[in-house]
Length: 175
Image 1 (cartoon, one colour):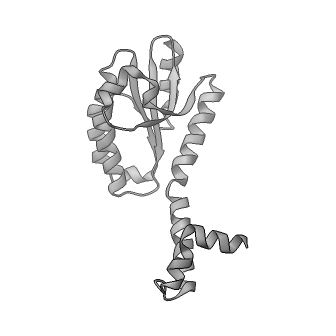
Image 2 (cartoon, rainbow, N blue to C red):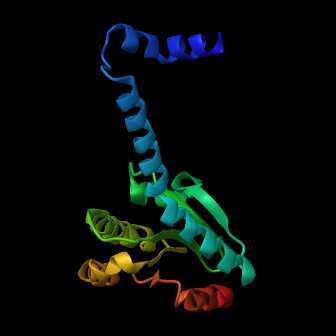
Image 3 (tube, rainbow, N blue to C red):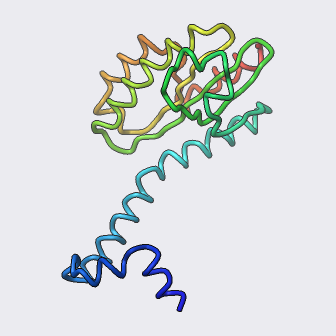
């Protein structure tokens, strides 16, 4: 009964009745492949977030995770319609750090797009007094996109990796 209810409520019954799917085995295999590739898609990002969280915790830095920009009325106007969620937010007496963290195991258009996006985002946030955008990124993927990362340095003053994140921690502790 539950299976029938599921098929009816998801619309799969109609899909099967209309013979939109010619081979059920191929269809299910395709769904499995799609779900698995989607699960892998951000695995590196989640691992990087976990590493950064551990480093911050070990250094006594208090933080919040997955915070939407709407929590900060001061930057809402600067970001406009962007519905941005930051991986980490760290508040010090002097400044609020809005942090993105990611890790790339391979090159490609994703790295270029993220670098371009953050290069546009950082100046908007940094123009608001008391806020700073920080990008923590790492991974072998940057080997093939080194020029994009170098370009990003021109627009994002605070770019760190797992090797030099201690510099950011030192700055935050002195704020």
